[in-house]
Length: 388
Image (cartoon, rainbow, N blue to C red):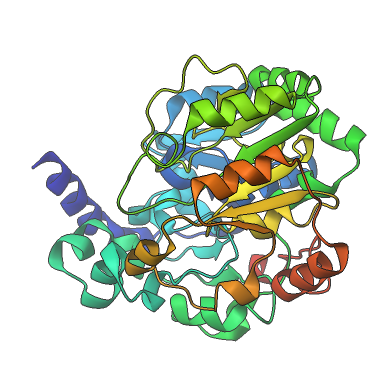
């Protein structure tokens, strides 16, 4: 009942958000469930350093304190200052939806959806199965009532390349002319020089991240497993992997395996393993990725970010492919648009890990990067959407 009343109040407040005059000079940033990550995080820091009038607006009061301690401007969306800032800002930069700040305050805002991954999976209005289909196509009352942000189209959307644009344009039901074909701000940390990355980590990342990176230097290889989120919410680390066997193989090679769950994935404890470490789902892993040797993933869009870095290895662990597509189908053929060693069973994966990291073929890597990111994967320009 409390949740219902909160959403009912949001519906009543939304029309009034159109009445507040918005300033073209003011910009608000936000991210999913009060986190500080993704493209919005990196663009916010970049624009803050350039002296732009930007503020991070979030329901997370602890995050507000942390950002202020870093010299960044932040407000709680449930404070008078935060609410006023959201209402007065002409441009909103978000990672997913207007709910990254607050849907009820989005009337009249110019929303730039930076999104959170290029890839193959059907999403939004392209969905054909699972909960997303119920939300966007069937529009059941429950899904529609509790997700009004899903039907608030962005004004601009990052689509990365010509290959990706038709898919994303149809997914959000918006014209391709409003799709910005450019790189992702978060990917600069993957390809910048070591000194620039170290300065960034020292200034903006928690001390735990710096300590972890220092620890990685003691291993011959560092693998990281980043599976996509599954609607079934099965524990992908303990139910589909023999962690003891993986730990033994890692120890024999003086290697380390990092387990990084999707922020929405429910995981159990991973304890008593000398060469396997669980990274909290809320941790921003992008500053850590350059210090890894190889990625283990499945259908996750992190693959296309990871291959922007040269000399890395990739293993695709797709043990549940036949079942996964029942919940989330692919927009493009999977096999034709991925790269890396294939592992359909755990034994396949264990063999790949046991043989050590094998860097991707450089020519194949470049072809896939060009396909998904275009000719300038590290460049972006949002000046158009700041002046409409």
